[in-house]
Length: 304
Image (cartoon, rainbow, N blue to C red; front, side, top):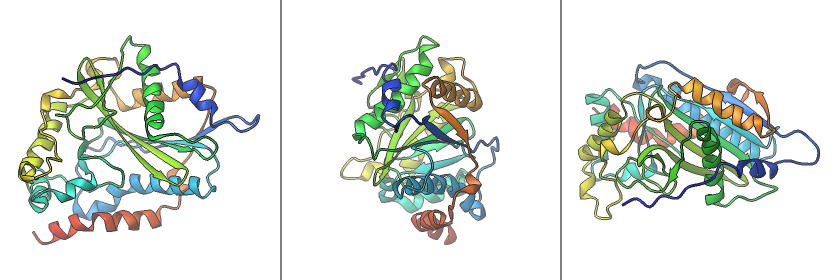
Protein backbone atom coordinates (compact mmCIF):
# COMPACT_ATOMS: atom_id res chain seq x y z
CA UNK A 1 0.00 0.00 0.00
CA UNK A 2 1.32 3.45 -0.93
CA UNK A 3 1.67 5.83 1.99
CA UNK A 4 0.85 9.28 0.66
CA UNK A 5 1.31 12.63 2.30
CA UNK A 6 -0.26 15.87 1.23
CA UNK A 7 1.58 19.17 0.75
CA UNK A 8 -0.25 22.46 1.01
CA UNK A 9 0.01 24.95 -1.82
CA UNK A 10 -0.12 27.94 0.54
CA UNK A 11 3.58 27.80 1.44
CA UNK A 12 4.94 28.72 -1.97
CA UNK A 13 4.47 32.50 -1.51
CA UNK A 14 6.74 32.43 1.52
CA UNK A 15 9.28 30.24 -0.29
CA UNK A 16 9.57 32.76 -3.14
CA UNK A 17 10.42 35.43 -0.56
CA UNK A 18 13.66 33.56 0.09
CA UNK A 19 14.95 34.63 -3.33
CA UNK A 20 14.33 38.36 -2.91
CA UNK A 21 17.29 40.68 -2.38
CA UNK A 22 16.50 44.13 -1.07
CA UNK A 23 13.64 46.00 -2.71
CA UNK A 24 14.34 44.75 -6.22
CA UNK A 25 11.47 42.95 -7.99
CA UNK A 26 11.94 39.19 -8.01
CA UNK A 27 12.52 38.01 -11.57
CA UNK A 28 12.24 34.56 -13.14
CA UNK A 29 13.72 33.85 -16.58
CA UNK A 30 11.26 31.86 -18.70
CA UNK A 31 12.37 29.54 -21.50
CA UNK A 32 9.78 27.76 -23.63
CA UNK A 33 10.86 24.97 -25.95
CA UNK A 34 7.48 23.60 -27.01
CA UNK A 35 7.21 20.99 -29.76
CA UNK A 36 4.29 19.34 -31.50
CA UNK A 37 6.52 17.07 -33.58
CA UNK A 38 5.49 13.46 -32.93
CA UNK A 39 8.26 11.97 -35.09
CA UNK A 40 10.87 10.14 -33.04
CA UNK A 41 14.50 11.23 -33.27
CA UNK A 42 16.85 9.44 -35.61
CA UNK A 43 20.43 8.71 -34.62
CA UNK A 44 21.50 11.57 -36.91
CA UNK A 45 19.32 13.93 -34.84
CA UNK A 46 20.83 12.96 -31.50
CA UNK A 47 22.10 16.47 -30.75
CA UNK A 48 18.59 17.86 -31.13
CA UNK A 49 17.40 15.43 -28.46
CA UNK A 50 20.26 16.44 -26.15
CA UNK A 51 19.71 20.20 -26.39
CA UNK A 52 17.17 20.61 -23.54
CA UNK A 53 19.64 19.06 -21.09
CA UNK A 54 22.42 21.33 -22.35
CA UNK A 55 20.14 24.34 -21.84
CA UNK A 56 19.50 23.35 -18.24
CA UNK A 57 23.18 22.75 -17.51
CA UNK A 58 24.13 26.07 -19.11
CA UNK A 59 21.70 27.85 -16.79
CA UNK A 60 22.76 25.87 -13.71
CA UNK A 61 26.42 26.60 -14.31
CA UNK A 62 25.74 30.28 -15.01
CA UNK A 63 23.80 30.53 -11.74
CA UNK A 64 26.61 28.84 -9.84
CA UNK A 65 29.20 31.11 -11.47
CA UNK A 66 27.04 34.14 -10.64
CA UNK A 67 26.75 35.18 -14.28
CA UNK A 68 23.02 34.54 -14.65
CA UNK A 69 20.94 37.70 -14.33
CA UNK A 70 18.08 36.25 -12.29
CA UNK A 71 17.80 34.12 -9.15
CA UNK A 72 15.18 31.90 -10.76
CA UNK A 73 14.53 30.34 -14.15
CA UNK A 74 12.00 27.91 -15.56
CA UNK A 75 12.44 25.85 -18.71
CA UNK A 76 9.49 24.11 -20.40
CA UNK A 77 10.60 21.38 -22.79
CA UNK A 78 8.27 18.65 -24.04
CA UNK A 79 10.15 16.54 -26.56
CA UNK A 80 9.56 14.36 -29.55
CA UNK A 81 8.91 10.69 -28.63
CA UNK A 82 11.82 9.25 -26.64
CA UNK A 83 12.71 7.35 -23.49
CA UNK A 84 14.84 9.37 -21.09
CA UNK A 85 17.09 7.01 -19.15
CA UNK A 86 18.71 7.51 -15.78
CA UNK A 87 22.33 6.52 -15.22
CA UNK A 88 21.22 3.37 -13.40
CA UNK A 89 19.46 2.14 -16.53
CA UNK A 90 22.84 1.87 -18.25
CA UNK A 91 23.65 -0.89 -15.73
CA UNK A 92 20.81 -3.16 -16.82
CA UNK A 93 21.99 -6.78 -17.10
CA UNK A 94 21.47 -6.56 -20.88
CA UNK A 95 21.60 -2.84 -21.58
CA UNK A 96 22.71 -3.43 -25.17
CA UNK A 97 19.57 -5.42 -25.89
CA UNK A 98 17.31 -2.84 -24.22
CA UNK A 99 18.75 -0.02 -26.34
CA UNK A 100 18.65 -2.08 -29.51
CA UNK A 101 15.04 -3.10 -28.85
CA UNK A 102 13.99 0.51 -28.33
CA UNK A 103 15.65 1.73 -31.51
CA UNK A 104 15.16 -1.21 -33.86
CA UNK A 105 11.77 -2.49 -32.72
CA UNK A 106 10.12 0.67 -31.38
CA UNK A 107 11.91 3.33 -33.48
CA UNK A 108 12.82 5.17 -30.26
CA UNK A 109 16.23 6.79 -29.75
CA UNK A 110 16.70 6.94 -25.97
CA UNK A 111 18.65 9.59 -24.06
CA UNK A 112 20.77 9.23 -20.91
CA UNK A 113 20.11 12.28 -18.74
CA UNK A 114 22.39 13.86 -16.12
CA UNK A 115 19.78 13.96 -13.32
CA UNK A 116 19.01 10.96 -11.14
CA UNK A 117 16.27 8.39 -11.29
CA UNK A 118 15.26 5.76 -13.83
CA UNK A 119 13.59 5.67 -17.25
CA UNK A 120 10.67 7.93 -18.15
CA UNK A 121 8.78 8.32 -21.40
CA UNK A 122 8.66 11.70 -23.09
CA UNK A 123 6.62 12.94 -26.06
CA UNK A 124 4.83 16.18 -27.08
CA UNK A 125 1.97 15.43 -24.65
CA UNK A 126 4.26 15.00 -21.65
CA UNK A 127 5.47 18.25 -20.14
CA UNK A 128 9.04 18.26 -18.97
CA UNK A 129 9.95 21.33 -16.99
CA UNK A 130 12.98 22.39 -15.01
CA UNK A 131 12.80 24.91 -12.16
CA UNK A 132 16.26 26.37 -11.64
CA UNK A 133 17.12 28.23 -8.46
CA UNK A 134 19.99 30.19 -6.96
CA UNK A 135 20.11 29.04 -3.33
CA UNK A 136 23.20 31.05 -2.37
CA UNK A 137 21.25 33.29 0.03
CA UNK A 138 18.92 30.61 1.35
CA UNK A 139 19.93 26.97 1.28
CA UNK A 140 17.24 24.47 0.34
CA UNK A 141 17.49 20.90 1.50
CA UNK A 142 16.72 18.25 -1.10
CA UNK A 143 13.26 17.71 0.36
CA UNK A 144 12.54 21.45 0.62
CA UNK A 145 13.34 21.89 -3.06
CA UNK A 146 10.94 19.09 -3.96
CA UNK A 147 8.27 20.49 -1.65
CA UNK A 148 8.58 23.89 -3.34
CA UNK A 149 7.60 22.60 -6.76
CA UNK A 150 4.86 20.37 -5.34
CA UNK A 151 3.44 23.41 -3.53
CA UNK A 152 3.31 25.28 -6.84
CA UNK A 153 1.50 22.36 -8.46
CA UNK A 154 -0.96 22.14 -5.59
CA UNK A 155 -1.78 25.83 -5.95
CA UNK A 156 -2.68 25.10 -9.58
CA UNK A 157 -4.80 22.12 -8.59
CA UNK A 158 -6.72 24.02 -5.88
CA UNK A 159 -8.67 25.74 -8.65
CA UNK A 160 -9.96 22.34 -9.76
CA UNK A 161 -10.65 20.98 -6.27
CA UNK A 162 -7.90 18.38 -6.55
CA UNK A 163 -5.49 17.30 -3.83
CA UNK A 164 -2.09 16.02 -4.85
CA UNK A 165 -0.74 12.94 -3.08
CA UNK A 166 3.01 12.64 -2.61
CA UNK A 167 4.74 9.31 -2.05
CA UNK A 168 6.58 6.60 -3.92
CA UNK A 169 4.54 4.56 -6.38
CA UNK A 170 6.81 1.51 -6.51
CA UNK A 171 5.25 -0.06 -9.62
CA UNK A 172 5.36 3.12 -11.70
CA UNK A 173 8.25 3.89 -13.97
CA UNK A 174 10.93 6.02 -12.28
CA UNK A 175 9.48 5.58 -8.78
CA UNK A 176 10.61 8.08 -6.18
CA UNK A 177 9.83 9.56 -2.78
CA UNK A 178 8.17 12.57 -4.40
CA UNK A 179 5.99 10.86 -6.96
CA UNK A 180 2.85 12.96 -7.48
CA UNK A 181 -0.50 11.15 -7.69
CA UNK A 182 -4.19 11.97 -7.91
CA UNK A 183 -6.75 9.47 -6.63
CA UNK A 184 -4.02 6.84 -6.31
CA UNK A 185 -2.67 7.16 -9.85
CA UNK A 186 0.71 8.75 -10.52
CA UNK A 187 0.68 11.71 -12.89
CA UNK A 188 4.16 13.16 -12.33
CA UNK A 189 7.67 12.41 -11.14
CA UNK A 190 10.45 14.67 -9.89
CA UNK A 191 14.25 14.54 -10.01
CA UNK A 192 16.92 16.96 -8.86
CA UNK A 193 20.38 18.11 -9.96
CA UNK A 194 22.73 20.41 -8.04
CA UNK A 195 25.83 22.29 -9.17
CA UNK A 196 27.22 24.27 -6.26
CA UNK A 197 24.48 26.61 -5.04
CA UNK A 198 22.48 26.16 -8.25
CA UNK A 199 19.58 23.72 -7.92
CA UNK A 200 17.57 22.25 -10.80
CA UNK A 201 14.29 20.46 -10.10
CA UNK A 202 13.13 18.32 -13.02
CA UNK A 203 9.45 17.46 -13.34
CA UNK A 204 7.67 15.35 -15.90
CA UNK A 205 3.89 15.63 -15.99
CA UNK A 206 1.78 13.37 -18.21
CA UNK A 207 -0.80 15.81 -19.60
CA UNK A 208 -2.65 13.69 -22.15
CA UNK A 209 -2.12 10.79 -24.58
CA UNK A 210 -1.91 7.03 -24.07
CA UNK A 211 -0.28 6.79 -20.65
CA UNK A 212 -0.90 3.04 -20.41
CA UNK A 213 1.15 2.52 -23.58
CA UNK A 214 3.93 4.65 -22.13
CA UNK A 215 4.02 2.42 -19.08
CA UNK A 216 3.98 -0.71 -21.22
CA UNK A 217 6.90 0.62 -23.26
CA UNK A 218 9.05 0.95 -20.14
CA UNK A 219 7.91 -2.43 -18.79
CA UNK A 220 8.86 -4.09 -22.08
CA UNK A 221 12.20 -2.25 -22.18
CA UNK A 222 13.08 -3.62 -18.74
CA UNK A 223 12.03 -7.09 -19.83
CA UNK A 224 14.25 -6.79 -22.90
CA UNK A 225 17.12 -5.59 -20.72
CA UNK A 226 16.72 -8.55 -18.32
CA UNK A 227 16.00 -6.25 -15.36
CA UNK A 228 14.67 -9.18 -13.33
CA UNK A 229 18.20 -10.62 -13.26
CA UNK A 230 19.57 -7.63 -11.37
CA UNK A 231 20.67 -9.12 -8.05
CA UNK A 232 20.05 -5.86 -6.19
CA UNK A 233 16.48 -5.45 -7.41
CA UNK A 234 17.05 -1.89 -8.57
CA UNK A 235 14.49 -1.78 -11.38
CA UNK A 236 10.71 -1.38 -10.98
CA UNK A 237 8.21 -4.04 -11.93
CA UNK A 238 6.18 -1.55 -13.95
CA UNK A 239 2.38 -1.79 -13.82
CA UNK A 240 1.19 0.24 -16.85
CA UNK A 241 -2.20 0.96 -15.25
CA UNK A 242 -0.80 2.65 -12.11
CA UNK A 243 -0.16 5.91 -13.95
CA UNK A 244 -2.60 8.37 -15.51
CA UNK A 245 -2.75 11.73 -17.27
CA UNK A 246 -3.49 15.02 -15.55
CA UNK A 247 -6.28 15.53 -18.09
CA UNK A 248 -8.05 12.49 -16.62
CA UNK A 249 -8.73 14.58 -13.51
CA UNK A 250 -8.61 18.26 -14.50
CA UNK A 251 -9.55 20.37 -17.55
CA UNK A 252 -5.88 20.78 -18.45
CA UNK A 253 -5.62 18.90 -21.72
CA UNK A 254 -2.71 20.59 -23.48
CA UNK A 255 0.87 21.36 -22.58
CA UNK A 256 0.21 25.03 -23.34
CA UNK A 257 -2.69 25.17 -20.88
CA UNK A 258 -0.50 23.72 -18.13
CA UNK A 259 2.31 26.18 -18.90
CA UNK A 260 -0.06 29.17 -18.85
CA UNK A 261 -1.68 28.08 -15.58
CA UNK A 262 1.65 27.50 -13.84
CA UNK A 263 3.08 30.84 -14.97
CA UNK A 264 -0.09 32.53 -13.69
CA UNK A 265 0.45 30.97 -10.26
CA UNK A 266 4.06 32.16 -10.25
CA UNK A 267 3.12 35.68 -11.36
CA UNK A 268 0.41 35.83 -8.70
CA UNK A 269 3.16 35.30 -6.12
CA UNK A 270 4.68 38.62 -7.20
CA UNK A 271 7.35 37.21 -9.51
CA UNK A 272 8.15 39.12 -12.69
CA UNK A 273 8.36 36.79 -15.70
CA UNK A 274 11.14 37.56 -18.17
CA UNK A 275 10.74 35.61 -21.42
CA UNK A 276 14.14 34.64 -22.81
CA UNK A 277 15.50 32.70 -25.78
CA UNK A 278 17.66 29.64 -25.28
CA UNK A 279 19.67 30.69 -28.34
CA UNK A 280 21.28 33.34 -26.14
CA UNK A 281 22.76 30.64 -23.88
CA UNK A 282 26.20 29.15 -24.50
CA UNK A 283 25.26 25.47 -24.72
CA UNK A 284 28.16 24.12 -26.80
CA UNK A 285 30.20 22.84 -23.84
CA UNK A 286 27.17 21.12 -22.34
CA UNK A 287 26.13 19.50 -25.62
CA UNK A 288 29.61 17.97 -25.74
CA UNK A 289 29.24 16.65 -22.20
CA UNK A 290 25.86 15.14 -23.06
CA UNK A 291 27.37 13.55 -26.16
CA UNK A 292 30.01 11.86 -24.00
CA UNK A 293 27.33 10.69 -21.55
CA UNK A 294 25.35 9.19 -24.40
CA UNK A 295 28.27 7.73 -26.36
CA UNK A 296 27.52 4.31 -24.90
CA UNK A 297 24.16 4.38 -26.72
CA UNK A 298 25.65 5.52 -30.00
CA UNK A 299 28.34 2.83 -29.88
CA UNK A 300 25.71 0.13 -29.35
CA UNK A 301 23.54 1.35 -32.22
CA UNK A 302 26.46 1.94 -34.58
CA UNK A 303 27.34 -1.74 -34.31
CA UNK A 304 23.88 -2.99 -35.23
